[in-house]
Image 1 (spheres, rainbow, N blue to C red):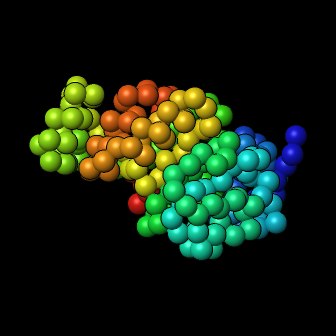
Image 2: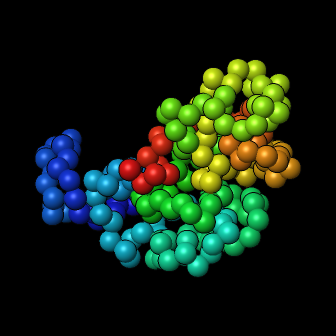
Length: 203
C-alpha cells in the first residue's frame, strides 16, 4: 500500500494518537485524499500527482486560469466545449474553482457514482427560477418543482452510457441553466451524488 507524507493543519484525533498543526505522518492515498479535501492536512507538492487516478481531467472554457490552480497536481486540463474527454471528467465553469484536495476525492468517488455535483442552494428550489414556460417544461419531467437545484458549473461525470446520455441531453437543453441541467439529469437518471453548497462557494 502506497503511503503519502502529510502535515496536519488542524487538530485531528487518529486511531492511535492525536495530531496537532505541524505534525507529520504517513497515510494511505485514500486517507490523504479525504483529509486533504477537508483541509485537515497539507500534501507536499511532489506527492500531489499521486492523489489522482489515471485518465481524469477537467474540461473548461478558461484553460489558463484552471491550469494555474491545478499546477503540480498532474491533472490534465482541456479547453473547449462540454465533452467526456477523460474516464473521469470535471466540467467546470470559468468562474468556479475548488481545492486540489476536493478535486482528488471527487474523482475517487466517481468509482462508485456516475455523476457528482454540488447543490446550488439550500433555499432556492426549481419553482423559484426560470420562466413559467421553462418551469412547465421542467415539471413535465421532474413532476414536482419543490426540489433543490444543482450547480451546473461544476459537474463530475464518469465516462459511461449514462454519462454520455446526460451530456448529450444537457448540451441540447436551452433556457435557464439550472432547470436545463435538472431536466437532463431526471431524464437519464444516473447514480448521482449531491455535494454540499460549500463545494462551489469555497466555504
